[in-house]
Image (cartoon, rainbow over all chains, first blue to last red; front, top):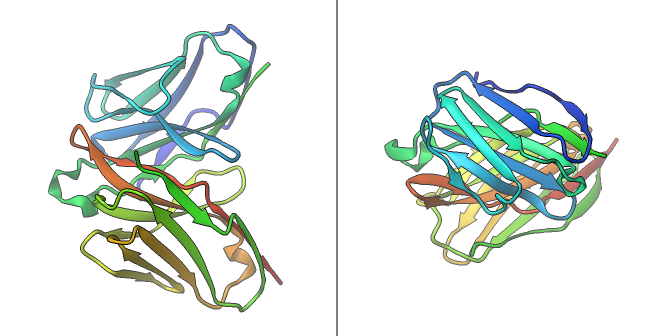
Amino acid sequence: DVKVTQSSRYLVKRTGEKVFLECVQDMDHENMFWYRQDPGLGLRLIYFSYDVKMKEKGDIPEGYSVSREKKERFSLILESASTNQTSMYLCASSPWGGGGAAKNIQYFGAGTRLSVL
Amino acid sequence: KQEVTQIPAALSVPEGENLVLNCSFTDSAIYNLQWFRQDPGKGLTSLLLIQSSQREQTSGRLNASLDKSSGRSTLYIAASQPGDSATYLCAPVGATSGTYKYIFGTGTRLKVLA
């Protein structure tokens, strides 16, 4: 079974803190994704990565950065946390889709609920 | 820009009913569409993936259909059970920079009453 592990289920941070959210997958997937989920807005893509050290902005990258130094690990960084970044953060991974669209199933972690006070 | 709408936003049914969840999307140039289930406070679990060349996909009591040209997908749940209570999300898949990209609907929150 594919496993996507997010390091924390719940985090409480203060405004202005630097926050790291970690995600690890064990299936050698090329692609990894960070989303945030808010009531009424659904899941929105923050950043994704299709290879080590590669990253691309999603729909809402402002206030976030990412790091992918190893294939299995994708980190989301809030440089200076703000209250409007209080949200549920979901990490996902998928294999490279070059073998056909059927292989691009995304597998999700359990989520990190972040509260910024 | 792809926009995804799911109707109804919430649904409450008695156990045993058959039900249909609807998903519509504005850009029909998709590679496939995936249905997910999300339990409260948890991540997403993949239920079904329909490729753009398929019309239907079945798994147990679940059946998903896709009409790409009209921008619609439905998830049919047969003989619903209380354990089916969850939020159901659809996500049509396009491609950006060679990476498949999902756009999610806001979901249908289902409650099945015992």
